[in-house]
Image 1 (cartoon, rainbow over the protein chains, first blue to last red):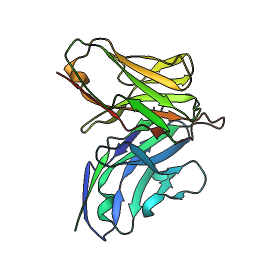
Image 2 (image 1 turned 60 degrees about the horizontal axis):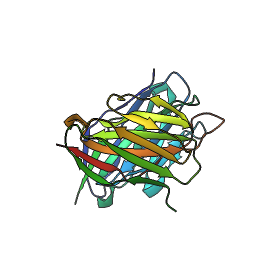
Image 3 (image 1 turned 135 degrees about the horizontal axis):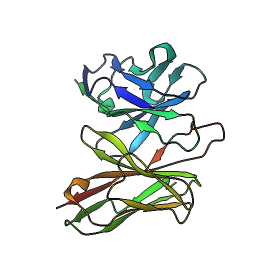
Length: 114
Length: 116
């Protein structure tokens, strides 16, 4: 069975401090993993994806994530938060089996204070 | 560059009314999906399609029907709307990959449905 757990429903940081959004997954197949961001009243935008190449993946807007198979984790990080990073973030797992659907975590709301 | 387009963007229904949400994509993607988003629940898959003329149930299919008569369109229908179907609905599409399920999803802007 496949599942994804975002360990924090809400994370608050100050502008200029590091961001860590945690995600653990479970998959019967070697998965692809994604992080999406959703700003208020908008659709979802891809931040980055892991597809069994490099385990450290760099995305847009300074975000990166590291795939750790031994820990079944795919945590999202950014060295220095910006006010514009305030949004909801979704970790997504895609079992590498043709025809199956992606599975979303419940989301983490990131708040950034000045 | 239209990408994925959803219509309508907003709709208010009375309980028992029917309606159809239309999703259109211009990227020639094989896979299309309908999700609903509710506070604290993330996105939950309603139905999906892996190709023209095929559909499959997702996690929360009850009360919804879908059709994929043309590759570029994926319709979501509510035959008899209920207040529990008040939600934001997102359509997404993805290109088929022969190497597995590695392609990213492309999302529409969402359709906000309220059922009174």
